[in-house]
Image 1 (cartoon, rainbow, N blue to C red):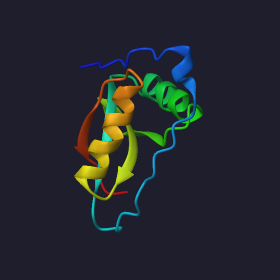
Image 2: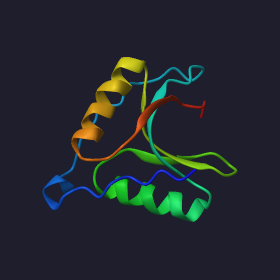
Image 3: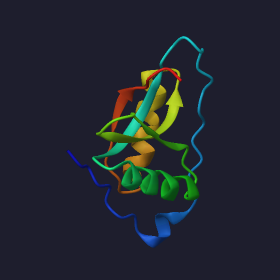
Amino acid sequence: MVDLPKAAPKAAAEKIVTKTSTIPSRGSGYSVQVAAYNRKSEAEKLASSLSKRGYTARVDGSTAPFRVRIGRYATEKEAEDALTKVKAKHMDGFVVRAPER
């Protein structure tokens, strides 16, 4: 499965600052998943692009699919709020439980 985010309009390229709560080391918390790729290089490319646009993006997974996720939120509500901001920038995504670090 490959979910590609829609390209954001040029005006939406402004930096988006999302506050990430501190998550206890034992809890996994939540993130917003915006894509998944079969090749890690593709996932890393998107994560890098999102980071340059002000998102706290990373690649999760050591085998395919490599998931591109934004933020680490202590509560599902905080992740849902971040998802709303992501969707306002014309990208698709959904809230997931984030794996422990």
